[in-house]
Length: 575
Image 1 (cartoon, one colour):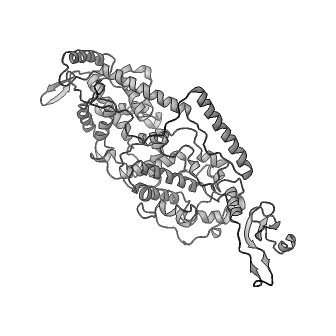
Image 2 (cartoon, rainbow, N blue to C red; image 1 turned 180 degrees about the vertical axis):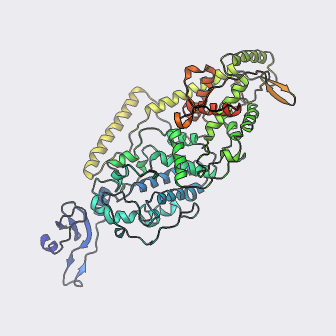
């Protein structure tokens, strides 16, 4: 009976190209080879109803199960859009300006799609294995569209409902509907996953997971939000912003398979320099105009950032006057120097947080030398003075400060190391690609969770506490405490002397971290850092700020060398 009803329909299946049709209980045609259900229905003739009436009942449960097993036809750029959307929402939850998601990040992303010819153009670049001719692409535009304006597009929120709508991705979906059905299967993953990893043409910027953070950072920088790059990466590492296993946020219908895992799975934490370099490449690729000026009232200005890091490092407030003098002396507080201008390729891309802590280190060297001798001699003198005169303002004691900071940093570093050691790199959401695999994978995952719970009970490990809201400060020091561990109100008496109408340092010595600077284009960096070549006091201060920013000490050391050569008017030499 079934063969009689289907023998007149000889069209091949769009999924497997086989002509082998059957009928469901609802009278719908399905392929017996791949179980693909199509819109065609059986025509029934009875005396009770109007002749040639089509059966309209649809089994919703069967359709839903089939849709989840099969998955959507989606592109890699759609996956990155979903991750960017989740990251922007996480930043908004942390207090970032609401404009960041829908007015800034969204438009930067759409500009990237146009520049990379993935959408908003007449002939989008096809990543599918079969090349498409222009006639295969359904488009309503006859000519190349104008360059997208930063403020002239709709928002992420307007396309939340369906990631494959034309308003969301221009003509990306048109390509998918024209050819993806011929190439996708139950375990196919994204349409263009395999070809996305192929070598790109020069000048075409490939999207990656670190690049999503670069998108977030240039959006924050455009709005001049009080979030540095080190803060952003710390929020990512602490799990407040989706990054590691971010594909778990994908809808159930967006299946990952094969090459998709190489694109979206992350097996290491984001690196500061990598994200910063990609940010520079991205801003140049998008051909963005000069960013809003970083003035002395902006959070990212070194005079303000120095206040933040002086407070976090528990250093005297009086040091801020000296950091401001250094900034003014080397002209690093000018808006032309601080503002990002992608058009000016020769301009230096400022690392605002690294610059601020490097200025503080230079000031500490100016006042205390940090040669493992002078600072300890002064500390002994200040300590004896504080014991005799306990009333009034205390003198800054470098030795006592060293002990307090080292104890606190060691405790925090131990916590951080333990958290990283316990961290599970595998995603909580198991990856499966068919209904047959689903039950097996879920059962294995449940077994692993049970074993971990039992092992935790036997070992007596504490339950992981619920994540607290992140803070801009990792170390907090209260001035009203009675243990004397807060040095904010301490004075620099004994280390300074009056000369005319200004204060100068008692010592007249200063040692340069590097006598010569390398040519960055030849060596790849301005200087080289080896711990054994420097005094322990300098290493300690460098490692302190390295911990606060969670960047390599060599990166801060390089910035210190650059400031020193700018301050003392030395010239760069080729190594």
